[in-house]
Image 1 (cartoon, one colour):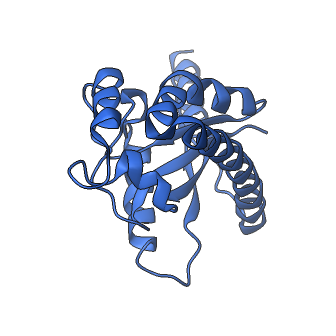
Image 2 (cartoon, one colour):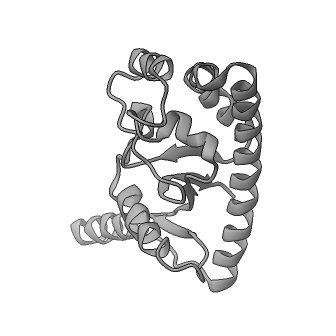
Length: 188
């Protein structure tokens, strides 16, 4: 009887910790799905940030990002959990916090040096599937909040950034540099 118990417990432990390896077709499908979600989310976010920049410059953009960006992202994640992560985060909730995030950051950082490769990937953790995509600093207007504090960010913008994000690390970026990653938990 004891032997059957230990075999059953052993099988349960193996089955709970075993993740099925994704096929090449599944990976390709997840990359397509993740890219579609990330592209749409980034489009909506940038449209809103651009409108705030036109409305009142970097100060209004920082206000929007601190108060509405997370809710906007959450509203777009009907089925799949969407977030942004970075090694130089502004919002503490966007810090790289897991080994999987660190692995994705390292792999995509390497991909950033090769213009012929896509800057996204699929990673698994147990039975969970995650899509990661690079968020490079892509527009000169981004430097108004993420550039050099002495040359590109106005004192007014710096003041509101320090008020809303006292532990801000998201400055001194240059155009094209890796700013963060989209992280999307793919739910089937």
